[in-house]
Image (cartoon, rainbow, N blue to C red; front, top):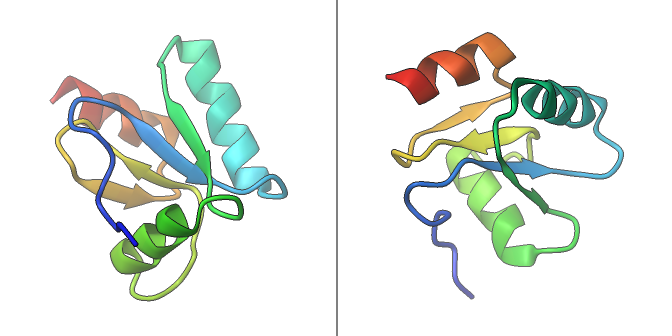
Length: 86
């Protein structure tokens, strides 16, 4: 089983279908014109393992991985914009 992080240079959001915070952030990203790869951790075991690794053993979503490889759990759209412009 691979637990590698997403490809460098991409913005990735780990999500679930039932997560309201995930839907809100995805909608905000869409409005801002920010492209994001969305991965449902309930349909991707490796993704679920990765999310647990970066969240102290918890499957907390949304977990966003930035192009530089850093991750944030439930970031605001302002934080996403700031980290993408850094």
